[in-house]
Image 1 (cartoon, rainbow, N blue to C red):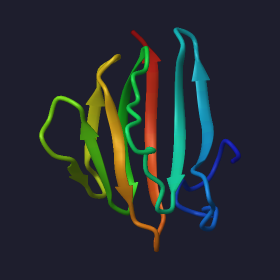
Image 2 (image 1 turned 45 degrees about the horizontal axis):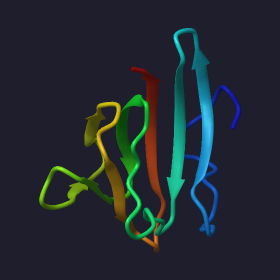
Image 3 (image 1 turned 180 degrees about the horizontal axis):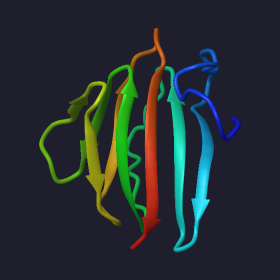
Image 4 (image 1 turned 30 degrees about the vertical axis):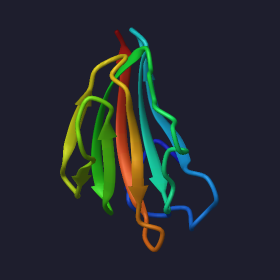
Length: 110
């Protein structure tokens, strides 16, 4: 993906794996990514447990995001955003298989 353009144009078609484009990297260890999902979810029993903080914004589609310390997944819709503190265990429960789910994720060092 080039440095100019529209984050919702020229999306990859349904693929077996998510597609991640790194949009920016900066001093202090931050990076901005666009992630495109088509029905992907975290594997059964898998939890992200990353050393970085993450702020995620759902741009398009719908997804279920689950935190280990919460009883149920949060359903995210366009415009919903979540701050995920470093080492907070979380997983993607589901994304729609029939449409693109587009995330914008900002990561920075804890």
